[in-house]
Length: 273
Image (cartoon, rainbow, N blue to C red; front, side):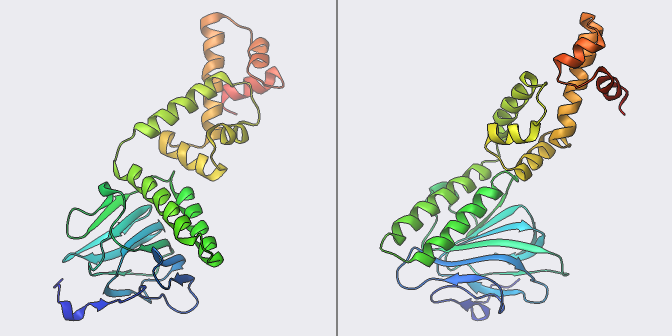
């Protein structure tokens, strides 16, 4: 795509508004936050035209896929992912067909405050996000919306703090390291191994890991390819087999040790029924 400056919509203050009825907020004055957008979008019917924002655009794709044209290239962006676009860098967003798309958008004044997030190539960078930070980013966005609705004397300070929280989460994702996930999974697996007799597994794990049930499910799917409940039952079966085969335990004793109500429940679990 040709980077013809005359074809670029230069936005003086704020950013391009979505079609009528789509939620958004545009700032006034010298606030550090210029624009907020959120919710479902239809970039097939209403594509975002090629334009340049006056601040850094943080475009987080929660659901779906879009086509981004930027820096003379056209690329498909699939959720979950984030696109950071420097001030003055032209870009556009479209869809080839109508599919559900859900987004979070921030436009903040200036470059990212965390130096590692400043785009190093052609004024933009794309970050593939694990599912784990999505809930947190949504919470930060909701809090930004609450703060701008208050519009009190503390607003610039609270917005700055919220920007820092958002950027730290994006930085963690941009490092492409599984270390944090590995540590959390090691803690999870160790907790499960010590609590095989527990019955309300999911609520207890949510409390232990400080995760919502939906985030816990996504976490297990990423780590094991299955749900928390199925993985927990698998661990119980494996431990039951180990105690019976290697240590000669009776089925009734194993059932009691692992929290089954009856020995028949364990027998059915071992048969996979």
